[in-house]
Image (cartoon, rainbow, N blue to C red; front, side, top):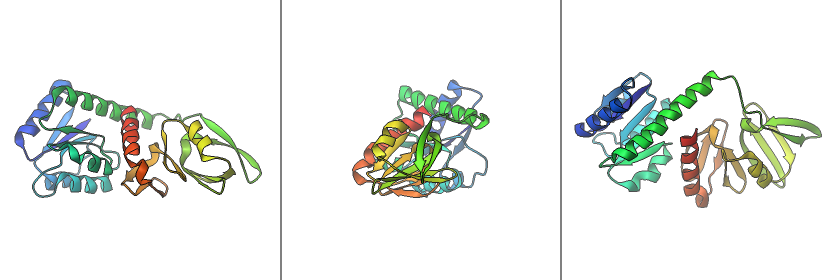
Length: 236
């Protein structure tokens, strides 16, 4: 596992690196003085501690560019101003730390990030998939569909369309019934859309980009979605 630390303050870089070493001496750390240096790094990072307010390319712009190359990177923002937190989640941040960094909070966030990386690696090597299924009547054909394979669902005139990882199905029903059945990994981001957070690639206050298509985000749902997505990523 490799952890990157990008901060233009040498004391912060040293502090985080030392805390990681004490947590697990086998974790490799790579230190960067700024966004330009980080963006030129070609090797794989699993976790990144990224300062938001840096000279040159700031942390937010750096994160946007990183997301174009690596959607799986766990980004933990480090900031002196907590007001940046919602902007941080616009680029899929895993969590954030406020300077001066509290040691207890640091290890809490690091522990969850490491567990997340380990779980992803285990899932990638596991051939098993969720066995939860639902039976639908699509154009007169009764079909079992895996709930875990639903990327998102939309409803129009009582007709629900399931956009799956490899197919699309339509049936008459209520999106609220599917929402209750689907569970905590799904979120109703709009009255017409229910998304599977497993397939979220990026989002902002207006829309969500998924592995298959994009959907509209209700402004009234945005803050609740950010909180739900953070809980989901930590749990995963």
